Image (cartoon, rainbow, N blue to C red; front, top):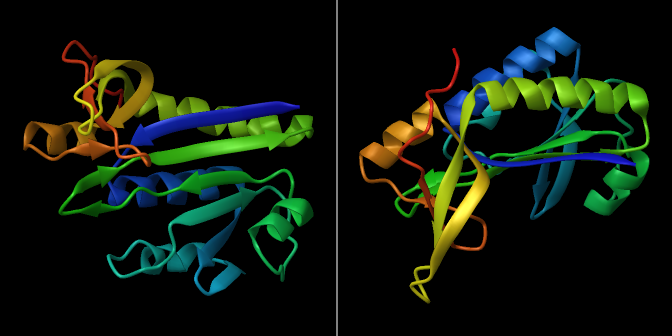
Length: 182
Protein backbone atom coordinates (compact mmCIF):
# COMPACT_ATOMS: atom_id res chain seq x y z
CA UNK A 1 0.00 0.00 0.00
CA UNK A 2 1.42 3.37 -1.02
CA UNK A 3 0.78 6.59 0.83
CA UNK A 4 1.30 10.35 0.74
CA UNK A 5 1.39 12.69 3.72
CA UNK A 6 2.39 16.34 3.43
CA UNK A 7 1.86 18.82 6.27
CA UNK A 8 2.06 22.41 5.09
CA UNK A 9 0.85 25.95 5.65
CA UNK A 10 -0.97 27.81 2.88
CA UNK A 11 -3.52 30.58 2.68
CA UNK A 12 -7.02 29.25 1.99
CA UNK A 13 -7.11 31.29 -1.24
CA UNK A 14 -3.87 29.64 -2.37
CA UNK A 15 -5.46 26.25 -1.74
CA UNK A 16 -8.58 27.25 -3.65
CA UNK A 17 -6.41 28.14 -6.65
CA UNK A 18 -4.41 24.90 -6.27
CA UNK A 19 -7.58 22.80 -5.99
CA UNK A 20 -9.15 24.45 -9.04
CA UNK A 21 -6.01 23.82 -11.09
CA UNK A 22 -5.51 20.16 -10.17
CA UNK A 23 -9.23 19.39 -10.51
CA UNK A 24 -9.16 20.77 -14.06
CA UNK A 25 -5.79 19.28 -15.03
CA UNK A 26 -6.54 15.77 -13.76
CA UNK A 27 -10.33 15.63 -14.24
CA UNK A 28 -10.93 15.13 -10.52
CA UNK A 29 -14.22 14.73 -8.69
CA UNK A 30 -14.38 16.73 -5.45
CA UNK A 31 -16.33 15.83 -2.31
CA UNK A 32 -16.67 18.29 0.60
CA UNK A 33 -17.05 16.91 4.13
CA UNK A 34 -18.46 18.53 7.26
CA UNK A 35 -18.77 16.82 10.65
CA UNK A 36 -21.47 18.50 12.75
CA UNK A 37 -23.85 17.59 11.33
CA UNK A 38 -22.11 15.11 9.06
CA UNK A 39 -22.41 15.92 5.40
CA UNK A 40 -20.54 14.66 2.35
CA UNK A 41 -21.51 15.83 -1.10
CA UNK A 42 -20.00 16.34 -4.51
CA UNK A 43 -18.82 19.87 -5.32
CA UNK A 44 -19.20 21.24 -8.85
CA UNK A 45 -15.91 22.84 -9.92
CA UNK A 46 -17.65 26.14 -10.66
CA UNK A 47 -18.90 26.35 -7.04
CA UNK A 48 -15.57 25.84 -5.26
CA UNK A 49 -15.42 29.51 -4.20
CA UNK A 50 -18.43 28.92 -1.92
CA UNK A 51 -16.42 26.39 0.10
CA UNK A 52 -13.52 28.74 0.80
CA UNK A 53 -15.42 31.56 2.49
CA UNK A 54 -14.68 32.48 6.11
CA UNK A 55 -18.02 31.11 7.29
CA UNK A 56 -17.85 27.84 5.34
CA UNK A 57 -17.95 24.79 7.62
CA UNK A 58 -16.11 22.70 5.01
CA UNK A 59 -12.41 22.16 5.75
CA UNK A 60 -11.93 18.66 4.34
CA UNK A 61 -12.09 17.68 0.70
CA UNK A 62 -11.66 14.29 -0.92
CA UNK A 63 -10.56 14.05 -4.54
CA UNK A 64 -11.09 11.08 -6.81
CA UNK A 65 -10.38 10.05 -10.37
CA UNK A 66 -13.69 8.22 -10.65
CA UNK A 67 -17.19 9.09 -9.55
CA UNK A 68 -17.31 9.06 -5.71
CA UNK A 69 -19.68 6.67 -3.94
CA UNK A 70 -22.34 8.73 -2.17
CA UNK A 71 -24.34 8.99 0.04
CA UNK A 72 -22.40 7.77 3.07
CA UNK A 73 -23.25 7.71 6.78
CA UNK A 74 -19.99 9.08 8.24
CA UNK A 75 -16.35 9.65 7.32
CA UNK A 76 -15.27 6.06 7.99
CA UNK A 77 -18.05 4.90 5.69
CA UNK A 78 -16.81 7.39 3.10
CA UNK A 79 -13.29 5.93 3.39
CA UNK A 80 -14.61 2.39 3.05
CA UNK A 81 -16.66 3.29 -0.02
CA UNK A 82 -13.96 5.52 -1.58
CA UNK A 83 -10.63 3.98 -0.51
CA UNK A 84 -8.52 5.55 -3.26
CA UNK A 85 -9.31 9.22 -2.64
CA UNK A 86 -6.80 11.99 -1.99
CA UNK A 87 -7.62 14.05 1.10
CA UNK A 88 -7.00 17.77 1.47
CA UNK A 89 -7.51 19.34 4.88
CA UNK A 90 -7.59 23.14 4.68
CA UNK A 91 -6.08 25.01 7.62
CA UNK A 92 -8.01 28.00 8.91
CA UNK A 93 -6.70 31.53 9.25
CA UNK A 94 -7.96 33.39 12.31
CA UNK A 95 -6.75 35.62 15.17
CA UNK A 96 -4.70 32.70 16.57
CA UNK A 97 -2.72 32.24 13.37
CA UNK A 98 -2.75 29.95 10.36
CA UNK A 99 -3.40 26.27 11.04
CA UNK A 100 -1.62 23.62 9.03
CA UNK A 101 -3.13 21.96 6.00
CA UNK A 102 -2.62 18.34 5.05
CA UNK A 103 -2.53 16.43 1.77
CA UNK A 104 -2.78 12.68 2.28
CA UNK A 105 -3.68 9.39 0.64
CA UNK A 106 -3.26 5.66 1.23
CA UNK A 107 -4.22 3.30 -1.55
CA UNK A 108 -3.48 0.02 -3.30
CA UNK A 109 -4.45 1.52 -6.67
CA UNK A 110 -1.36 2.12 -8.80
CA UNK A 111 -3.32 4.39 -11.14
CA UNK A 112 -4.60 6.59 -8.33
CA UNK A 113 -1.30 6.79 -6.43
CA UNK A 114 0.54 7.76 -9.64
CA UNK A 115 -1.82 10.73 -10.04
CA UNK A 116 -1.67 11.62 -6.33
CA UNK A 117 2.14 11.65 -6.52
CA UNK A 118 2.01 14.09 -9.45
CA UNK A 119 -0.24 16.35 -7.38
CA UNK A 120 2.06 16.03 -4.36
CA UNK A 121 5.05 17.03 -6.53
CA UNK A 122 3.11 20.03 -7.77
CA UNK A 123 2.33 21.07 -4.18
CA UNK A 124 5.98 20.66 -3.21
CA UNK A 125 6.92 22.93 -6.13
CA UNK A 126 4.73 25.66 -4.63
CA UNK A 127 6.23 25.38 -1.15
CA UNK A 128 9.50 25.58 0.75
CA UNK A 129 10.57 23.02 3.31
CA UNK A 130 11.85 23.24 6.85
CA UNK A 131 10.92 24.85 10.16
CA UNK A 132 11.68 25.03 13.82
CA UNK A 133 8.87 23.63 15.94
CA UNK A 134 8.20 25.44 19.21
CA UNK A 135 5.95 24.20 22.01
CA UNK A 136 4.52 27.30 23.72
CA UNK A 137 3.51 25.25 26.81
CA UNK A 138 6.93 23.72 27.52
CA UNK A 139 9.24 26.21 25.81
CA UNK A 140 11.00 23.36 23.99
CA UNK A 141 11.92 23.58 20.32
CA UNK A 142 13.48 21.44 17.63
CA UNK A 143 13.74 21.01 13.87
CA UNK A 144 10.73 20.03 11.78
CA UNK A 145 12.46 19.56 8.46
CA UNK A 146 9.50 18.26 6.45
CA UNK A 147 7.05 21.09 7.22
CA UNK A 148 6.25 23.14 4.14
CA UNK A 149 5.12 26.73 3.53
CA UNK A 150 3.66 28.55 0.53
CA UNK A 151 4.70 32.05 -0.41
CA UNK A 152 1.50 33.45 1.13
CA UNK A 153 2.20 31.68 4.43
CA UNK A 154 5.76 33.05 4.45
CA UNK A 155 4.39 36.58 3.99
CA UNK A 156 2.11 36.04 6.99
CA UNK A 157 5.10 34.87 9.04
CA UNK A 158 6.97 38.05 8.07
CA UNK A 159 3.95 40.06 9.26
CA UNK A 160 3.99 38.26 12.64
CA UNK A 161 1.27 35.65 12.11
CA UNK A 162 1.78 32.38 14.00
CA UNK A 163 1.90 29.12 12.02
CA UNK A 164 0.17 26.44 14.10
CA UNK A 165 0.05 22.67 13.86
CA UNK A 166 -3.14 20.81 14.73
CA UNK A 167 -1.54 20.01 18.10
CA UNK A 168 -0.87 23.67 18.94
CA UNK A 169 2.85 23.59 18.17
CA UNK A 170 4.13 26.80 16.58
CA UNK A 171 6.22 26.43 13.44
CA UNK A 172 8.82 28.97 12.35
CA UNK A 173 10.14 28.52 8.79
CA UNK A 174 13.90 28.17 8.45
CA UNK A 175 15.39 31.50 7.41
CA UNK A 176 17.55 29.98 4.68
CA UNK A 177 14.64 28.66 2.63
CA UNK A 178 14.54 28.96 -1.14
CA UNK A 179 11.57 30.79 -2.65
CA UNK A 180 8.79 28.55 -4.05
CA UNK A 181 8.93 28.07 -7.80
CA UNK A 182 6.20 29.92 -9.67
